[in-house]
Amino acid sequence: MSDPNATHAHANPAHCTTARGNRVRWLGVAMVALLATPCALVWAQQVNPDETGHEPVQTREALARAKPVTAKHAMVVSAQHLATLVGVDILKRGGNAVDAAVAVGFAEAVVHPCCGNIGGGGFMTIHLKDGRNLFLNFREKAPAKATPTMFQDADGNVVDGRSTDTYLGVGVPGTVMGFATALKAYGTMSLQEVIAPAIKLAREGYILKQGDVDSLDSRTSDFAEHANVAAIFLNHGKPFKVGERLVQKDLAHTLELIAKGGTKAFYEGSIAHTVVKASDANGGILSLQDFADYTAQWEKPIQCQYHGYTVVSAPPPSSGGTTLCLILQIIEPYPLAKWGYGSVNSVHYLVEAERRAFADRNTYLGDPAFVHNPIDRLLSDEHAAELRATILPDKATPSSEIKGSLGAPEGNHTTHYSVVDKDGNAVAVTYTINFLFGNKQIAGDTGFFLNDEMDDFTAKPGVANGAGLVQGVVNQVEPGKRPLSSMTPTIVLRQGKPFMLTGSPGSATIISSTLESFLNVVEFGMNMQQAVNAPRLHQQWYPDVVYAGEGLLTPKSQQTLEAMGYTFKRFSGGAVEAILINPETGVLEGANDPRRPAGLAAGY
Ligand code: DON
Image (cartoon, rainbow, N blue to C red; front, side):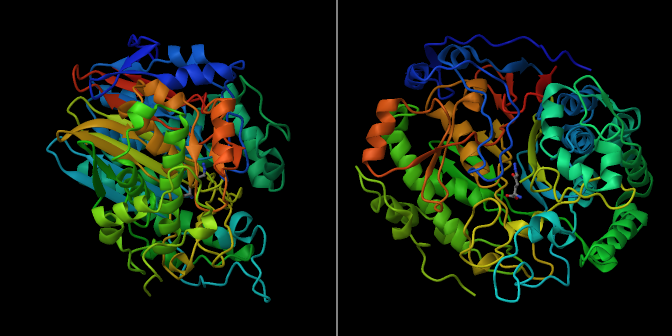
């Protein structure tokens, strides 16, 4: 396994060379200085931006010093160090980026149980060395017995917790099908080989670090509610402490069944039977047929251009790529680099672009197998120009004045990781069980948490979901439908070659975190680590507030923006796990987000 402390790049803290090659004075650093507070690396939960997580505050000095981990040949960045090392090991043994991505995904199901999973679903964006861009959709599906009003009571009120804490919130999991599908199509190793490290970590256990314990601690009382969960995730009834070993024998057994029996073991064998039995016993609607019918699908990725970069990202049923591209297309003509990171103008135009893009997202996007997604219209130059024309130069636009701009529509927990191999294959994966530890329940002795992904649907048009998103009828629950996601696994190309892999957890904030990790490099001259660490910004139409990370704004900028009509709330934003491939040197620059202190960037 590789040395995580590989050689570091050197960065001049005051002047950073942008990836576009121009030298830009990084004004944001000076602003951050004004709000300097001690740097603390704290694991931050982020699902609903209103549930403010603790942010590792970036002092001027800390942010200016931040440097990516560098490697010559190949790299993995994930939210859990042991999973990263599993991926690097696979790459060193000659596996390609797909082999490593699948191995990391199974490993994270063990060592990052809040978020890594086999009980949820996700998306994989792939760039192959031959130039092809691919996208795999392994999003969960609503069970066949699901109905549009299943999360409402007899009076039509949304029932608190039903979509997040019960078996009704569980979508048919897609992760195992997704990983097996990707591996078979583009990997070089067997399922047994790539699952083996995960089985070992589950059977032998692993020593918990502070970041792991912080994550487990956030759900201690939920674990205590179910004996089979408490037996694994509490240590004789008490929260685990740093330095203790977490062993997951049940999960090891489940992973062994998958390694031996493939997707059949999960979707038709004893694993499906155990989940359906638990669902039946607890008021759920999952059936064996739902599992047997599950498929993962290859889709055409969303692509857009931004100042010569090609952004390749997630199409529906994720809103991620479309919303990201719509924001980029609105802001492209503005001189963000000149205005600077955290400046009044940059914040104003970014917020207004996000507000309009999220209004469209929440109104028009849903599973394309069920509803028409007007992507061509949303991503047309004319549409971006129309939206741009509605932005007032010196005033916030209230969200109540913004509607989905095409007229009436027709008809939180997650993790991201990035892998690049020695040949230039690149894989970006975001997968999730929605909220931290999903619905917090484990079916029988399966050992894995089930998702609560059904909460991503519109429980009732106009009523906010757990992520605070106010969505419409296009994303209502229907049998076999996939809930609209914000996951945005993204590969940015420069002259056809991978330039950046990025993505994040954080529900709706995924989109802004991903966007900013890119803009911070190409507009604001940051290196990859600074771009990931920097305080973030987010607006999602409703609520009509602007979420800003601590240190983003000077008190004076904040006052100016408040006078323009903005209301600010503190937030932390997601956890970006990114790789930049330096176009001049070819060196890989990996950046784990300090908001996930258990994570690691490593390569060789
Ligand atoms: O697919 C989605 O957009 C959400 N289910 C993702 C949830 C998430 O990111 C939670 N938190 N970090």
